[in-house]
Length: 241
Image (cartoon, rainbow, N blue to C red):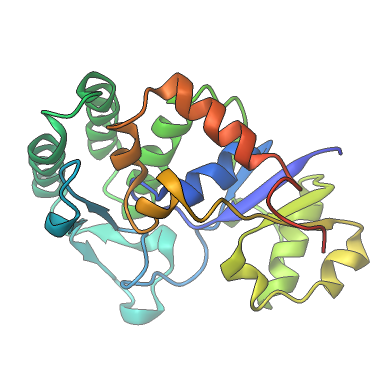
């Protein structure tokens, strides 16, 4: 198949479906040079104590946008890094300290908290949280930031350029992206668009909007890697486009 890439904004403690797509790729291009969206998952994650979906709530990192709504993800700053770190620590401990797999959650949490000391950029902290979860699964792919790569501005053209310049032969595209994607730029550079879907039921359905941390509180990382590896194989749940 050649090299498979996923292109996605940095998400803070991402959802399981997002993590599955990245896990299925040989490398992740972090889309950090597009507009920051407050209603997205770039600076927040939904969490709840296991078995208590009625207590689900947002864990949000207060973020300052130097250029207002036009601020790019790479330029967004944590309003108070120390406070965001402490808030993350308290919230995750409160929700998951009595869960079946608290030990692995605790290991993840420690490394996520370390990320707050390394940068005050919201996107970098979010990227680190995703990297920690991928490494827990044993993922050995590469992470590249789009801001360091040449690409044109139009949405689909940008994605095609990013895939092509990094040597991808396949681009994984989730259901949200498929609604707007123009396939012609990909065809022009010889990159195949692969639809990526995860199952609707079971663990996937119950955690659709939740941070993948929630799933890790219920399943050991080694079993999660098997689950994601089976569902994430290109073509298994998606169709070639």
